[in-house]
Amino acid sequence: MSTAPATPHTVPPRLLLGAAALLWGWQTGFWPLALAAALALEAPHWSARRVDLDPARQRRVGDLAVVLAALVGVGCYVAYGNPRAIVLFFLWLPVALLPVGLMHAWGSARALGLDVLFWGLRSARAGPAPALHPGYAYFVLWLVGAAAANQRGAAATGAAVALGAWALLAARRDRSRPGLWALEIALVAALGSALHVGLHGAQLWLEGAAPDWMTGAGGTRTNPYRASTDLGTIGALRQSGNIVLRVAAGGRLDRPLLLHRASYNDYGGTAWVARGARFAEVPRAAPAAPWSLRPGAATRTLTIAEHAAHGNPVLALPAGALSVDADIVSLKANTLGAVQAEAAPGWVIARVGVGDGPPPAAPPGPGDLAVPARERAAIDAALAEFGLGAQGGADAVAALRRGFAARFAYATTLAPPRDGRTALAEFLLRTRAGHCEYFASATVLLLRAAGVPARYATGFSVQEFDAARGDYVVRERHAHAWARAWIGGAWVDVDTTPPDWAAREDLARPAAARWQEAFVDTWSLLRYRYALWQRDSSPAQKW
Image (cartoon, rainbow, N blue to C red; front, side, top):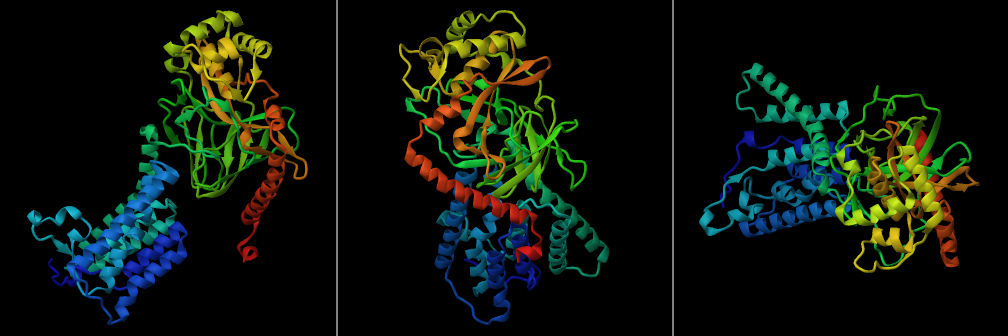
């Protein structure tokens, strides 16, 4: 392997790599790691000690870095799913490749063969691997990682441009032509600004264009593209009592409040899917102004707090939400009404302006009237039993409410379908008992069959008041599903699940679960109060 000495123009100047690592730490918030990396990368400039590694040992260090990079990619995918995992991979890539950076900084070889990282160049047929000084390439990786944090502030962009100008000045071969250097600086400024926002834009494009990449998980995570249902699940449906939201409404509500997270328009038998639900940025009038979901005058304000352990939560919002004011990076919404915040893991506390209008979602399309062929027979039979004909949307909804209230019951203990029926057909024609996903799915398809466009909606039902604090707590077991129907030129929430469903689930819990829940509630309240203190305290008070 060639280890020819590098020319001065290919070697980054002192402190440049360390400054890039510190910029990464500033943008990501991982200051201790960035400071340690900066010191380790720059210390060799003041030390004569060097480590002489033969090519085989250099490749082992490269193998370690490649394995770390692969683990970073897998970890990001498992924890966050694509496409956010792609952006986070670039954020952590310079840290994964730190072993190679340190090997070069403390090693005696000034140029490293590309076969250190690229296994395909190690075969005998490939011949001697090209060698180069990796300093500037590693410098660029730190800048890309800082850009992936998506802070997008003017100071951060200016710092990235300044570092790029410093690198250009050090690498220039001809220092006698200042005009050319000024042009290079201008190009660096343009490229640096584009890089600082480019990864963010790429993430938005991927999330809008590749919905099947998204993954969902339990707890508070919601997949805005796909909702797996428990239709056909055998046995008892059990949900946790962990608190996932706190809602301050200025007093008691006169009825349960539905907080919408996502809607879906295509039913596949075991899952609802959002087809054509592209995300777009939600505008705001000024940097400090709330994000505006739709125009209108707010009649009340809700404070909705959620602990997003994995960051970037899909917000739980009432149907009449007009604006969102929260400490987040950005907000985006899809055409079916899902609203997702770009925020770091932790508490997201939003002040939501609420009006009397309909939810902000696109008008119906052909898919909002589709009924799967395998459910058609059961839906037609139920249509006749419910007396649904050519009446208008509001009358069809009223007939459905009466039919479900008179003939159906809420249940979490489910039996398997018989005679080759689907789970939904079994619910409509035989058992007439199920949980909210059965009622919501049946309502959507029955309305569609009656000529009323409808969608499947998921979120939470707010109904447990915490008298000690004067706000509402929302638990995982308060997760709910309902229908949205297009009536009078607007989407209207239609919930046909028996209203006592939450009380039935609460009574079914064993006494031991109640005691355990009391301890968990105390811990949740302490975390929430600490988040409020962090939000409302000045820097001096925090110290």
